Figure 1 (cartoon, rainbow, N blue to C red):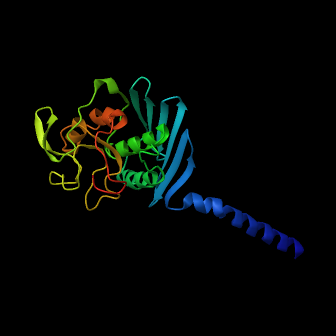
Figure 2: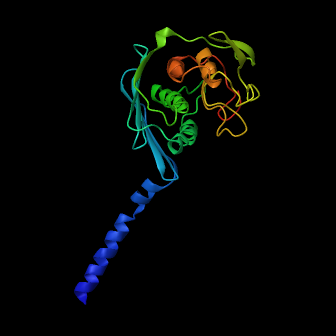
Figure 3: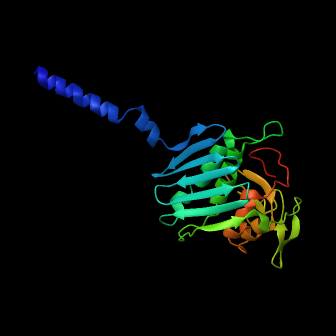
Length: 248
């Protein structure tokens, strides 16, 4: 009997260990910040059986590696701000719809921990985390992704911050500029290199405040996500904002 009792205790302890706080935390849904310091930002978002792990590391001065690990695929960026060169490095299967839906709440979680004000500007890692997570929102779903390089010196053209009909390049004129009402019949903030804003946006207008022609062309289905890569990663913020979570 004593032997049976000891075996039962050992078994119960093994079960308790296998379902302990660490494993429960690992499987918990929602946003989790794993690390946040001067050179590293690591966070996860899990929902509906899908998950993404974002890891942003400044490996040397002004050189940042960004990885979004869905298990399959893994999508990486190598961004060299010294040279003004970025590399898009996908591997594995195409991004699926369930995985793509994780990006907006991941961005919302990151934005909540890296607010930016004049007194407390974002670090290089924080800025890269916001910009590349914003970019991940426009990576095509269900398509085979291929690596490519993009270069900041090829430039971008800023748009006016005031909403109105603007020239967005390649012979096109469209409504673009700040504001949720600047929507061209869809989400607002047209031309913004980041999440659009609208009634269903969660949260509205999070990310950069750079408005450019290539981002506007992508917003209207007139340009590729690849063509907007340098704008997302390198374009300077030419428009001000009234705070995180507001329409601007």
